[in-house]
Length: 296
Image (cartoon, rainbow, N blue to C red; front, side):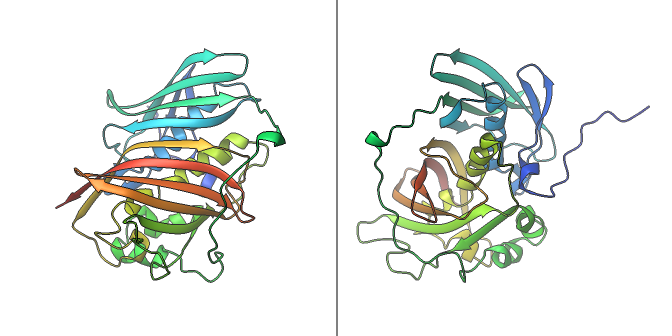
């Protein structure tokens, strides 16, 4: 008898992180790698849920926002099922809700809104990108990831899928500014080219990238950024919710500056927000996240 157990896709490039199998109408299956030991990486769960939602929407409608909650840690040793509900298809906007299920339990939920493009230069406005060094010559996080856990996904596979460069915390204004907000700046992009004719994958890739460092921004007053640590710390960080707004088209396989700020940490929680800019200063997305923060 042939073994019918589904197997995870081998991770050769970034697009493999977003791979889903459609197993029934409005039902998809995917695998997620570990972010922490025996915990599926939340950014990949969110990205795959957005892929599932986008596959049920007309191609001329692009996602402009998502709101999500992490309810239980996913198990990277098992597949996740993504069930899509088609809540509304209006003349300009479409709304989808996605529930990620594992072993009969809901581990994650996402609501996403899609819309038809409405270009109008008369309403264009954005805040300016801060003046910071470009990614060239800045340190990469891979050595630190390997030192923390040489067997982890981050140490063994991440270099094939993502590029990251860290603006050092010794720079002025880091990690905590004079107003009491902690700040973190990183350059990120997919390490491999994404299909130019699939804008949904560009957005879903950014959803993945947005979860790499945001939670740690809320805890910079307690520990160095993950990319600068050489050993594990007695701090527990876990994403509680995640929201994103996509302002303008972009490519996630070009360098993007992720400007992060955390205005508050209290009651076992930390709030962090961030903006993504292209290299020429175009503001393309905004993200907010609340994270659980506990000292062991």
